[in-house]
Image 1: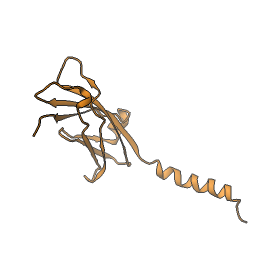
Image 2: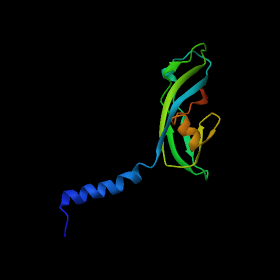
Image 3: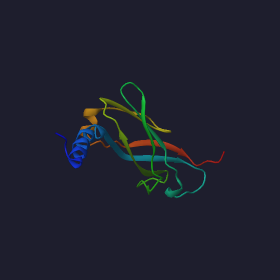
Length: 128
């Protein structure tokens, strides 16, 4: 017996959908510590590249954070920017912001933090 086309499509979608959703989204803020000789606005501060590696140290995703958006209270040398990156399922992740220290986290630690990781990076606005 042959299934009607709309049932076959629905079943095919149900079989494919779970494998497409096996990853996670890591997000958070990046504190952009600015090196500049002149005054600047946070909106002048470019975003930074954020690389995510899996447990075998393979680069799995790379994104660029937003530009700076808000000055961090009590300082005139840092801005915050947001980032979000979709990653495949893994037991371990290393998150490396350009110009910053990497964070090594297990899947359990990320689940505990609701997949939110705040990072810090240095950004130079110096000419040359």
